[in-house]
Length: 350
Image 1 (tube, rainbow, N blue to C red):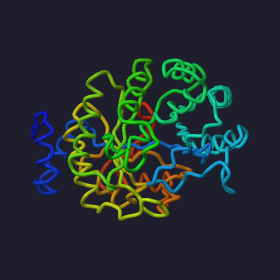
Image 2: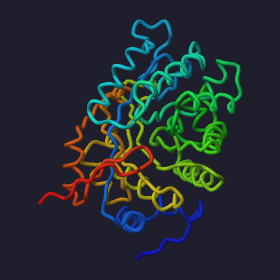
Image 3: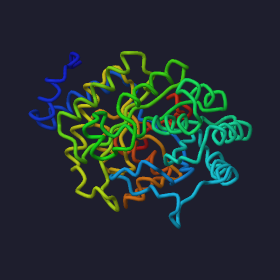
Image 4: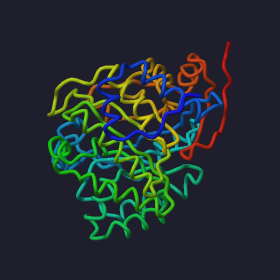
């Protein structure tokens, strides 16, 4: 087995800038095989319900947000959300990923009532919702501390917190692309407080906008150090900026860039068990390739997704397509839940 000692920032930057793609891939794939020797690639059946598109953050890289007075601004009703969840459960789903804009009109009572209603109607479903920025927004709207907000949300039925809104965890970059959004220290604070309450979390990275290679490295190490300090990250999910219909514009990162950062993530993040490939932004074939660059998970089938789609990136995949994609790469497919417990396995078809 090829052993990779824990590398530091300088070494990681050297790998990103100097080593060729296939060398990094070889190391990342060896690490994946060591962590996941059972030859399984996992996925979850989920739905991304965007409860509002009203957002005061107005990030320049986002094509989804609307001002409150826009003709297509919305806040979904509880009944509309329940209807979407019922469709998810009927299709065998186990995870609800509910995220929305930073809406100044929504206080904690809205979420408590909604989450209690979801638990009463769909007790089998994992409520994996609200990014750290949303949690901070809810706390501010409601005049509460972060501790009070997280405890009340958990008591109402929030099970785990996704790592959205991380972008790049370097404030110089954040101030350029999302100056109204929380800084990296607040993102970290929410995640550590959630972990202290026993809530699983995930971490993400959106790269390819205005950051430098050094910023990508800093992001990875801040995630690793947060996990060392008591974080509860079950997975890391990097994806590339999608410039379509955004104020920021520009071009997206190349497939080579994506695979190199993905593989380096597997090498640096030695304390996070799962690495997820983003078929939603990269497409099915690139996600399949990513399984040989350190990834062991393809995320959710996403019965619905609106945020990335607003930027003109609208890949779709059914559960059967997901299974065939995994099997076509020579792996056994396995449906999991949010906690990465295996629910069903699908052998390799010959």
